[in-house]
Length: 396
Ligand code: C5P
Image (tube, rainbow, N blue to C red; front, top):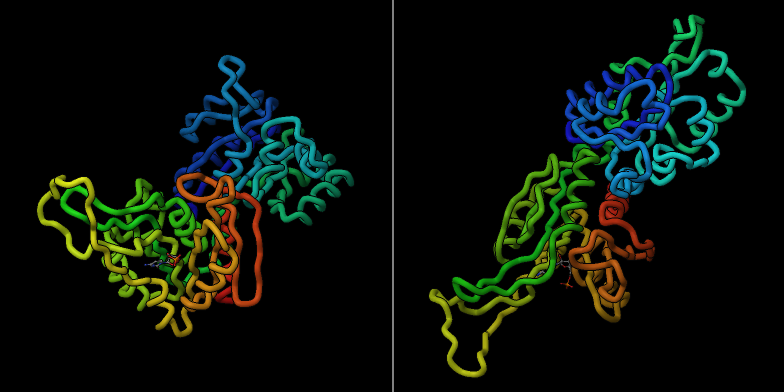
């Protein structure tokens, strides 16, 4: 389950920090990518060099590098992470987390991370049992933080009792189990179309559009992470295939139609995110078209609307479509929802700043037969998660 997962490991200033080295190594051996953020005190217990070497990534401690002003973005780290694991977590850090104090990078990252946070407390037994610590842990648990149980045993102070950090092997197992529990789409096969189609004019020129495929690829990745079997039918894009996704490359709208129809037979759901050409040249010249006159006409014919064709035969299967509009957004999207027999349409408007081609953010509105839900400007990865939530609801 940990293969390809992004684990952000937060290390705080406890003697158990030495075990974070082994934890980091075990996570990597299990296939996870690991980045480490440390509190300044944690550096007294284990060196950044050790953690950087084991994680294969530079360590983040301060908000910025005083030498060159390079900023460590807590938001970017939080977005990168599939899980934020704070191990060891001291009484001090747990208290600050409970009260929203943000006086170091590890804590600001906690406040901005949207992924699951997991803490492995590590402290002396009296500190652990203190009402204040127990209240803080209860508060965090209530907010959805997973608290890894501290086993009883001998503590660094020589005392016996609760407060030891859970052993690294068990922590890795617990994280693995958490990901397993999140496999909400396992057993579902979902096809996603993404990117731009290419309609050849001659051996040199083509008609296409500005789609980069970022939204569709983010959706494919989000669905695969939830355990769905994902087939990504991809037009032109420069993006890498997300982990665990099977990619089928196509060129023209016709190619995409054929691939989508074949794939839909075996799918439970289709997410139609591709920017498909609506028209294609009637004839493709076998040789390069020479320039002659001042004007030049190209006869185009309509392509097949893939979403519409799948909508006609969908039966119990689900279809999510997209509407990229420049005007009359709402009514155009509603019309498409009906006409194409979609279960959900994701509307974005080119009039919204931060939405549309190429950017890493999007501002979308979900529209189904009975509801309309407008989301704020979010990263495309976050929009993909919200779409995955919607797809889950379509099934269950
Ligand atoms: O009608 P319009 O092109 O605006 O509809 C957009 C939706 O239809 C998107 O989900 C897009 O992927 C899908 N579509 C398609 N085949 C086409 C054109 C659009 O699947 N030929």
